[in-house]
Image 1 (cartoon, rainbow, N blue to C red):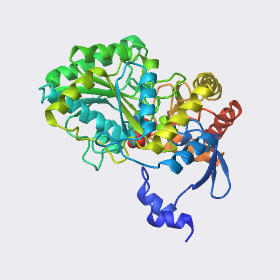
Image 2: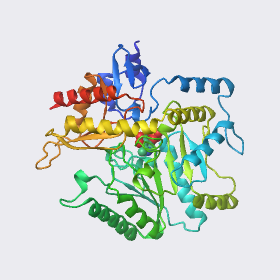
Image 3: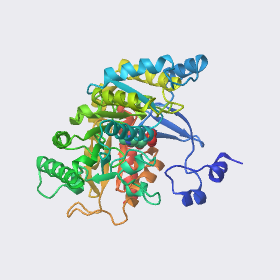
Image 4: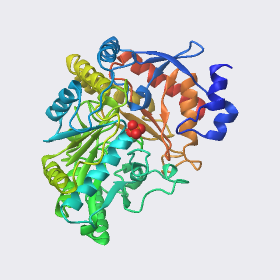
Length: 450
Ligand code: PLP
């Protein structure tokens, strides 16, 4: 059997229309990648405007990443970190993360994915309130369109209906509020300041309605990624933070996409003025060469966890692959490359260039309702009409068509769920010439979709 037939017969694809896949087979099998280019099984090259899933930040097949992984796999491929045992690199990496963190943090807990890290966050928050003698304080607030994973808990934190339907999610302790999405959520004539004030007031009303003694935490991406690349107004998070502080509600920053330079600054929290008590990172920590996530814990939370461990005994949470040495080797090499090659400054410069290109190419297009983003993270949201503002009736179909046609033009982009939005999140090493070609490819895709 050909690979394509085996794939269709046996592989259960994530985030895929299962019936369509069985009928049409795998539309694309990637066999190789270098820099910002991937090659399919027919030998055709594509520019990957999404760095995989917002993650291959240092680009594909970086020789130093391969060397670091080879060296670690040849010396010690695995040892666990349970019961005070461990290996060298996770210790070095945790110190490095604490040094890099945008706000003071004390400890690092390693996992394997953004989803499991956000489940860890919920468990930490619940444990924290149990230790403090507040067993009712367990609800977690998230935002519609936020993406926080797909596990039983994190899938509910994610504010996308498509990830809930059929799965009995979200779990009952989760609440969602409106996102700071100007295009659809801001009232006509409302300023950014007024919009932020209104969203903070809604959060406060929710907390009061639920009872502050029942609300434990809020989770938020600084700049939303999969929900549509939504950059909040400058005053949004400071106003949200005030409300959370008033009711002793912890803030969890989900930096899975934003972290390690995607926005042209080290972390999203820096960019939007968040002061999280807990932080989640994944993806860009290893540029996805090896799965790795981490939860960063502030001293305020850590002191309570310590107390809890005295009360409950050994901290009953951890994965076989927590603090995996191969993943830590990938992270150390990845962070070395980003630092040494000045890639975060490059993201800021090339990000500004990408936004210029997008404005020039799509600014006047009658079906482009909004162009937004920051650093090397951008989105085009399509509408049926700009004046009056009206979305397409079949939500998502237009963006999907643009994506498929862009691929025919040699550019991989991504249609985001529950919105007519295509996104850009290219590798940090993408050249200006490649950025230009990505924009040209998506323009060709749009012209074919219209
Ligand atoms: N958080 C954010 C902001 C994400 O974008 C994602 C994945 O896209 C996750 C969490 C979940 O990460 P994973 O797919 O590694 O479980």
